[in-house]
Image 1 (tube, helix red, strand yellow):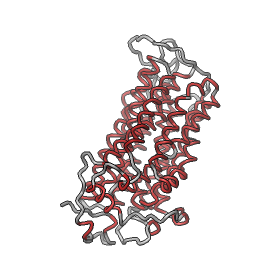
Image 2 (cartoon, rainbow, N blue to C red):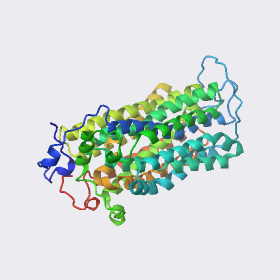
Image 3 (cartoon, rainbow, N blue to C red):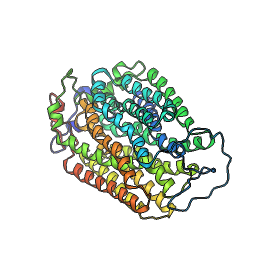
Image 4 (tube, rainbow, N blue to C red):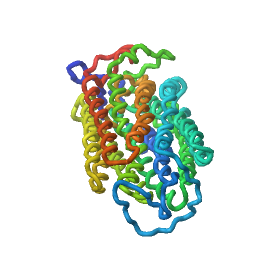
Length: 492
C-alpha cells in the first residue's frame, strides 16, 4: 500500500511524522482513467482554446496590415527576405488596414486591459460559488467576442480594441478559477504533475494557433482565423459543461477510492471557513509578494515574445506570413515539453528524494527565469543568422516552461484554501507586462532596427533576473499560518 506524506506533515527538522490511521488506510488511486487526470486533460484543452484565441491575432495582424506585396511576403525587413516556392493565393478578399506601429501596439496589448479586471474577482467568485461555470462561461465569452473580431476590425481600430478588452475580461477568470478548482482536486504530491498537464494547454494553444493561423491566412483569409478557433472553443465548452464537477464529492462518475484518496490527502490543508477571507494577512504576506514579483518578471519576457515574435520574424528576420507562424510556434513546443517533464521531475524530487518543496520551487524558478534571460539577449546579437536567432529564441521560451513547477503553482503550497484568490492577485500584477510591454516594445522599435530590438530584449532579461533573485530570497513552500485555522508545523 502506498503511503502518503505531504509537506504539511513534516516538522521543522523535516522528519516525516506518522500518518493518522484514517490516512494510512487510503490507497493512492490509480492515475489511469481517473477523474483528476481527466480534469487535467480537459483543462489542458480549455487552456489550449484560451491561448489560441489570445495569440491568433499576433499572426493575423501581419496579414491585416496594408504592407504586403502580391506574393504575401513582407515588403521590407532588416534582413533579406526569404525566398520560397510560388504557391497560389486563395480568396484574399478580406480587408486590410493602415494602422501605424503605435496603433498596432495598443491593439495587441488591449486584451490585457480587460484581463486584469477579472483576476481577483475571479478567484473570489470561484471560491464562493465554484469554479466550473465561472471558468466555462469566461472562456465561452472570449469565444463569442473572437467570432465578432472581423466585424469589429472593419468598424475601426477602436472597436477592435474594445472587443479585445472584452475578450480579456472573459479570460481573466480562467487561471484563478482553475487554481481554486485544483485546491479541491490535486493531492499535494501530485500537484506539479496535474497542474503542468493542465497549464501546458497554454503552450499547445500557442504552438498550434501560430502556424495554423498563418496557413489559414494564406489559403483562406485572416477572418477565418477567428471563425475556426471560435468553433473549436464552442466544442470545448460543451464537453466542459457535461463532464466536469467542482469537487470530487460532487462528481457523479468518480470512484470511491479516488474520492477518499483526494479528500483525505487534502483534509489537513483546506479550511472551509465560509466567506471569511484574511485579506490583511494575505496582502502582507511576503511569500505571496515573492510570487507576485516573480510572476510579473517572468511574464514580461513571456508576453514580449507572445505578442511580438511574429512581428520580429517578419520585420527583422524577413520571414513571410507562410513561414512566420510555424517559426513563431517553435519556442512554445519546447516550453510545453519542459513544463510537463518538469512537473514529473518536481514531484519525483519531493516525494521520492524528499527535497523540500521550497527548494524545488526555487530551483525550478531560477532555471526557468535566468535561462530565458540569457538566451533572449543572445538572440539580439545573432544579426541575420536566422538559424541562431530562431534557436536562441526557442531555447529562451523552452527554459521558461520550467517555471510551471516553480513559483507558478506556489500559491497552492502556501495557501491552498485561498489559491484562486492568490492567483488572482499575482496574475493581476503579471498582466501589466501584457498591457504595457507591447506598447513599450513597439515604441522602442519604430525603425525596426536590430539595435532597437536588442534594447527590448535587454529590458526583458533585466526584469527576469530581478524577479528570480527576489523569489529566491523571499519565497516559501509551506502552508502559511493565516491559511488554516489549526496550522501544522512543517518545514520550509
